Amino acid sequence: MQDGIKAPTDLLIGGAFRPAESGRMLAVEDPATGETLAEVANGSVADAQAAVDAAHAALRGWRAASAYQRSAILRRWYELQIADRDNLARLMTLENGKPLPESQTEVDYASSFVEWFAEEAKRVYGRIIPATRADKRLLVLRQPVGVVAAITPWNFPAAMITRKVAPALAAGCTVVLKPAPETPLTALRLGQLLVEAGAPVGILNVVPTTDAAMFADAWLGDERVRKITFTGSTAVGKELMRKASTHVQKISLELGGQAPYIVFDDADLDLAATAITTAKFRNAGQTCVAANRILVQEGIADAFTERVVDLVERMRVGKGSDEGVQIGPMINERGRQKVLSHVRDAVAQGAGIRIGGGELTGPGYFVAPTVLTNVSPKMLVMREETFGPVIAIARFRDEQEAVDLANDTEFGLAAYFFTKDATRAWRVSEALEYGIVGLNDGAFSTAQAPFGGYKESGLGREGGHEGIDEFLETKFVSWGAVGTGI
Image 1 (tube, one colour):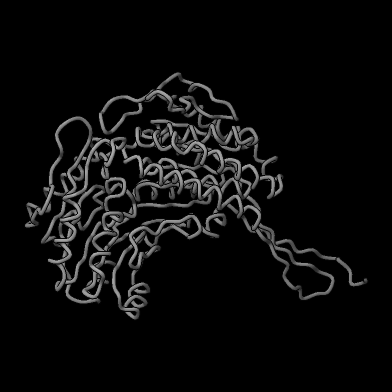
Image 2 (image 1 turned 60 degrees about the horizontal axis):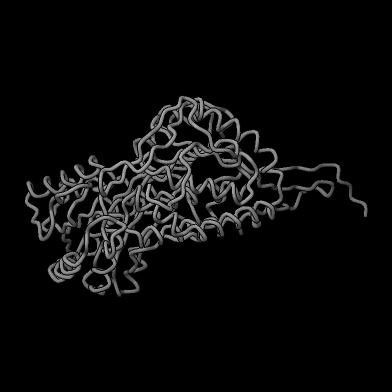
């Protein structure tokens, strides 16, 4: 790694960093150069089980701690993340490839979940229900679900962790975390900062591995693990859901997206064009809420396209640590080839390339930002999540057609639409079958609001008041023989 950047390379189990039981290592690659940044301990199933042992041992004390004690630890973790902002951002840019300003913004976003749930820890309320008999009292308690297994992706190496781990810890759960093998350094550094915050031993255990399926099976097969929280592909989410049924483990899933981006003829075209550079090109299009199907009303399609092309022409592609770079590389060669295959498929079926369309020469996994026109629903760019910097523009006639096209998918994570008509804003917001709707907004994610999808985009919500509910059980206590005297 570059001089001055701090991150452990061993597993965090039971409050201490240690090598993998097998001695194996995994290589962490810089996607902007293809070079190896570091070697990190590569966990085995034995390490996965040791992590659960540590989390289970820590559970009794952590859930017994007061909400204010848990809140204080999380608050200190938040403060240490803010103090370590530059280091964390540089780590993310190295192992993920995203531009440094994006990584800095992600640290702010990630830490905001820790701050939010530090406060929500103190707002886990039960209630008293009026009883039908004078000698009874009916109580409802909210209690931590238990040991949580969190499995996170590479595209947001910090935020995908904190928005799972922070509410789990706030609720009184303990956590075993498997970060993506592409981006383990950020996860290990976050774990190190929690240890430095004075966290009790074992409440968070971080175990990178290349044996994802075996880890999942180990945790799904362990009755002590009472909750699985996963962000990743729909196919893997379905498999986890099937296996979680064996021990009836609770499960939260944040899965794939196919986000429509609808621009009506009464929209502010400058706003809609500018917003798409965030909604599509953040992390080089490698986000689950990236605008994937750009639906533009016929009368303004040409004007909108010209604005978008003008903006894309000015965007700089390159290594994320270089000054002025706005678009970094794909995470690996497989990701790059998927994007390029979508472009080739579209062109073969009649789409036009206004700008971009190919890979860039030199080291790293770069794809030129691309604008496609004359796109039709049968093309891969309209049927699958491209996960790359490709704007695919299709046209529609009227509002109903736009809504029908937008909802014509098994996914339902996020949607965007642009209009100045207030009545249309209500109609379309309600008609879109999505868990998140950006109305004249290309950047909606925030710690205080619920994030999650409809249909095959997942189960449960992260963020907002709803985020901590995912890690709580509800217990009803019927207290009899209370007596009626004073």
